[in-house]
Image (tube, rainbow, N blue to C red):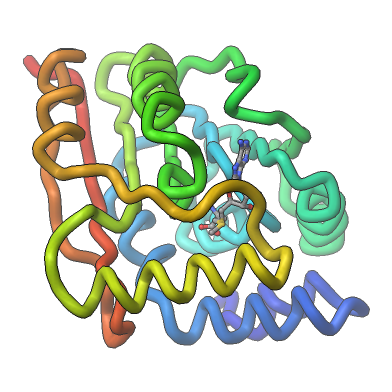
Length: 217
Ligand SMILES: C[S@@+](CC[C@H](N)C(=O)[O-])C[C@H]1O[C@@H](n2cnc3c(N)ncnc32)[C@H](O)[C@@H]1O
């Protein structure tokens, strides 16, 4: 069985990504949640804003065998993702640098976009969701994790941490803008998708939701 420590070791000798992977995998239910959302779905996967590619490792560890492609604007993260995937011997995995504000990769299959939407302007968010939906093959899924614009202390903490990440240079862009649930629901429905919204926070204090969508019928 591949453990969180095994996955993190692929990011060595760099200590920074090693410890990031250890703490992220230990504290955030994201990758288990996405893995469960994709169980039984073996379409090629596009990971939009993939960061250092942790999803590729966690999905392979749970038996996901289809092609995986990750894109991210941050060339250093893509470099770390490529090196770690090679070290872990992940097959049929590729990573490319791409700015979603300017471009979107050609893809047919499943799409994941995890903790990314809040880092692009609202007008770009809508365009990215349209582009993700256009990639969906019949039976394939669109999996989104995002904070949602709602009242309450959880969103205040989420926003503070996202701003902190930007100040430290972990994230680029403007202050975070969380999608509004009603707008996202309406857009997905208009695109002909049936969507399920579930909180995905685990024991974290964040206002995080997992949205799983498929073509209706
Ligand atoms: C919070 S990280 C999430 C990383 C990954 N999805 C995960 O959950 O492990 C957000 C990612 O979005 C990427 N990102 C932000 N704006 C982007 C853009 N315009 N184009 C491509 N990637 C972008 C950042 O570089 C960062 O890696």
